[in-house]
Length: 121
Image (cartoon, rainbow, N blue to C red; front, side, top):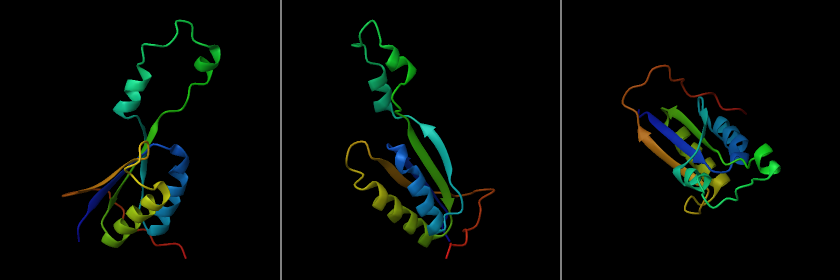
């Protein structure tokens, strides 16, 4: 049985809860979630054409631009496929801008990995 690392970077943090719920229902044994920021967002943040005097509103409530990175080590191919399909159905077309990226990498060794969680009925 192959073990894989499923990585998903989402640009819209509002869909995080939906993805976590769908992955749990698919039997994903556990998910780690990190705040992250892509290099394109970093470039946007380093603009040098901003006015010298920045509004107080901008300083006190900056726009949220962080991504979320979700990852899980999955040792069941069916669970992996269902998790991928769930993410695609929630996020949509990954070729659209500002959706995110998803990829799978083989894991040759792992420690502390949970076995597949029983699915909710």
